Picture 1 (cartoon, helix red, strand yellow):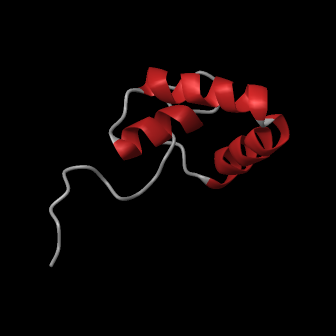
Picture 2: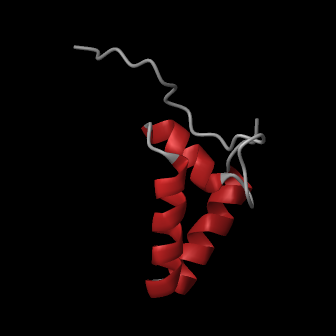
Length: 67
């Protein structure tokens, strides 16, 4: 049975809501979360897991579409 979603299944980086590359804003839009909470989680992740967070952020920023 298909569930009915109002949000898009496609992940993208919005160019109008970005601070650095728009990855946090894209995650927030895709999941339906507040972008401020995603950015706070990113900062906390950078403190404890610096290298994996930076690598993931850079890769996500490079491979996703910006619209």
